[in-house]
Image (cartoon, rainbow, N blue to C red):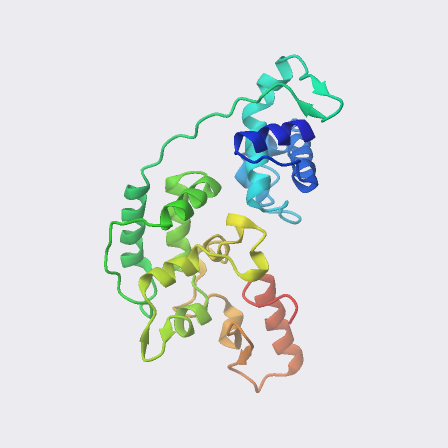
Length: 274
């Protein structure tokens, strides 16, 4: 595994000793794949989200939802058969680095400009009414890298755009009403889009899977959304503003309010440590 990570580092243009964290992730990714866990889940993406059989619910915790683990697991899946059929790579005992170089497949090209155009269409159609109006622009700038990462994680352009649309329909109350306000006006549209495809500080090591859009898209089925600003039945009684709990029905007993708070935390609509 160390030899394999070293070879991948070299292919990525990194001249350094393999990081032990990457070696362990690669070992785990190899074990997960050869045990058939991703096949049982239906796909790598499904496995990473905690699904254990095709079309089944999430059970247990999500397995290490970070970008590097996804990359290693995908690499193992594409290289496993050729590696199994080939002769073992020779290892130099002084460096413990394999002399055989793995074949890195070129990723299929993606029409990022077209995806960016569709994403802006979806924003115009589905963004909360409290968010700023879109002024279309064709220049991707740094957004291109973010889009490609999201497409890879989601499993394809259609899945990515579908997740984006779903997330826009389920923006939590704080981000729907308080966040877009900036001084006497509104934030620019680019800020709101980046808000969707960025992670909170507590998610900074989780890569793409920490993006808010992937979390918000999974909050509830679209049919269950109660009304703009209300994403969960318990939000009729209290909600998390992003910094504190706001009580809409303070007349209720502490026991009842704690039950609603627990429901919101379980749904990802409140902080776990509150």
